[in-house]
Length: 272
Image (cartoon, rainbow, N blue to C red; front, side):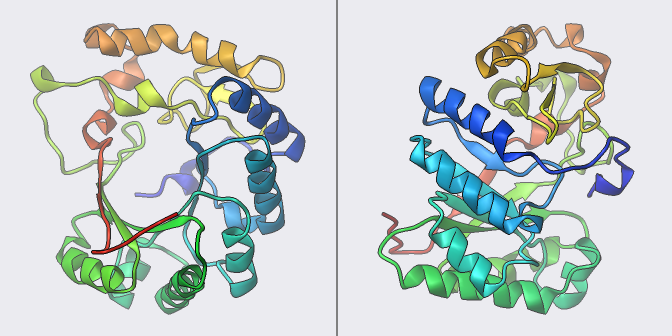
């Protein structure tokens, strides 16, 4: 399901200066906006930069700073820094319970290392009166669906919140098992709620456009509010159910079927 090896666009690291500009603009306009440090990349490849970005965002008044990681680089020092960074949510994508199933889905990773990393993070979080919510994510696929129940039981017992979702096609790059009749199509949750910013400032029209082939501008040059406004006509087509007028990429995409995720929290859980 991972399209990263197929990507042709240049890969890089978002500079602190760009994040500072974005964070200041969002904090001034809509501080409750969910800001996610994840899009076609692993944020813990640059842990010091990530933590500095989180701290800076929190100092500006941003209220929803979220990290999505595969957990492989979640060492104890990184875990401590993340818990102290001001992050509001940490999501670890795991997608398997047994070593064989996990490592078939997460190529190049090590199930035992990731499980130990996440269990340590949860233990460190329990020692604190407040801090981020920690979720473990399971993307249901044909090869791992049989492990969903033991996965859920295991992590609920350890105090994690479960995030269970369906597989994305990433704009039609992969086949997904969901099949909803075209007549029942709904406005795409991704199109209505999200605006992505690549590391170099480019803003794609849609999160499924991982190459940025249909961009609306660059955040180095255009204010966030203007970039969001430029996506408004696209959102209106969805809201008005004028799906046949959408760009060709949207007509072939099935990701509007997979926008929702189920979250299951441990019994008696409390978060500050």
